[in-house]
Length: 528
Image (cartoon, rainbow, N blue to C red; front, side, top):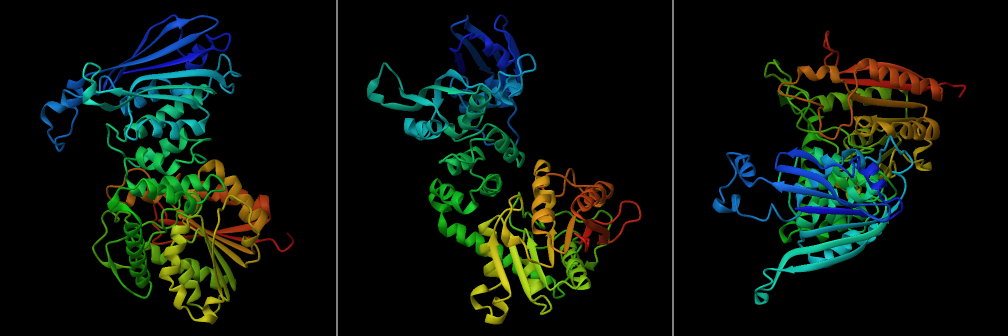
């Protein structure tokens, strides 16, 4: 399979600097699927073309198939992989041009930011959706698209057209952007990937789509196809994209449903929401005394809100070596710790920032001492589930008057966040990308400025107590802090914004690694 990239801006050979591949050399790169070769068919001042040729080893691909893979007999060896651009080419492109995709060039640092007149050509590209889909995907990105359907066999025109197109793109685009467009959209057009799609594919999509995917009119279709129609991953990606700007998941969901297969349309979405609400209700019952066996980190999770309200997650592993005794789940103990601290502080108005499905909001409403309660989340779907779980439509008028639920993001100033005695961020900050923490700090401590702020977050030191856990406790966690790291962050934020901070353990305080959850309680200086 072949990709060519042509630059026609003088001096055209600057393309070599941007791709980090010398025009006078032929370079080979070993791939799991075969060998990728980069060479320059032409290179002069007027016109420079770089070619990426991926030669597939079908035998190696067949041998790499897992034991559980179905046996498709000859199709393992006789297929279009050696000839048609697909996710195999996208992976090779991503690895071979990794630095170029990142927009870095040490030799000529001014070049990556320059848009160049480029021509990209793919002689054979599987396109499930035909030329129209290719235009829908590339034209909003500034490309002039020429997509010609290839016949099944030129010698037998009566056989009709194939699902392949010859794709030519022309436009004035940064090289890094052009490569990332192809990296994401090649498997989208093919509507398939040659490898297992793991949760880290969401991160790859967000990185490669930075600056263009959030505003793309087909972002729902792109996200779902890129993630192999795995709905849980697609929802996570769309929510993260929503958090990056002013769009919300509410606007993104229709694009996702539009490309859904018939059996996964609105009815199934409603059923899934109902099931999630039911699970949340069951978890809420645990607060009234329901016991759970051997669960150190089970309980109702906050629904899929990665940027500003990910919240508590279900399904974390049980503690290694713990006897199977009936204990309260950590999520319940965490909620009780927060409620107890709010009561101790004398707060009467509380806002739950990143409220998810409303577990804490419901607990606050059940206590008359909290006369005004608000819940904010970036995910409209989570808020819909929260409203259903709280039985908002049947809630007594006096109780309903105490409650406000609204959609918002923690990284954008919002006057609705102000005017509360206390704000709670329960298992939220670890879902925020570290570069965006500064925005969260400004919004919560600089703009909203409640009298008290209560923050809980996992203690990564405690992770060694979880059997079979590798990495972080949840795939959407951007980080997890040690006690020292959390203390350093909290003390800095407190000093910068006129607060004092105290720390308390939540859960069993292990003498070696500390508690599973750490809680910081911020109190604003009376003079500030």
